[in-house]
Length: 89
Image 1 (cartoon, rainbow, N blue to C red):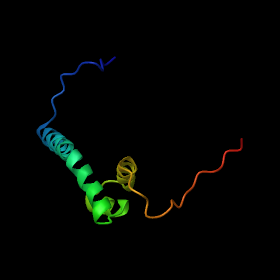
Image 2 (image 1 turned 90 degrees about the vertical axis):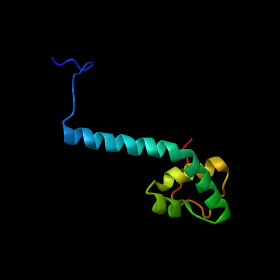
Image 3 (image 1 turned 60 degrees about the vertical axis):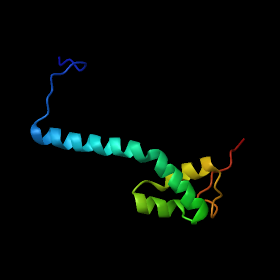
Image 4 (image 1 turned 45 degrees about the vertical axis):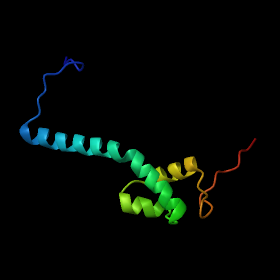
């Protein structure tokens, strides 16, 4: 049986290059997370950007920006098109 807890794995050169590239992207995203959040809040408040606009421009999901907007207390521009079903209680 293969021991999953330990490994002497060393990726091949092409794999190592791709893995390093991915790690750099993740690290860069972490560096801009807070400034991106602050800028998104500013743009929604002051410039009228929607969560869809921000999703389109950044490649992040609209839900990501919806959560930021809710947390920042930004009012919705329209009511959601999908609603919860009423409980049968």
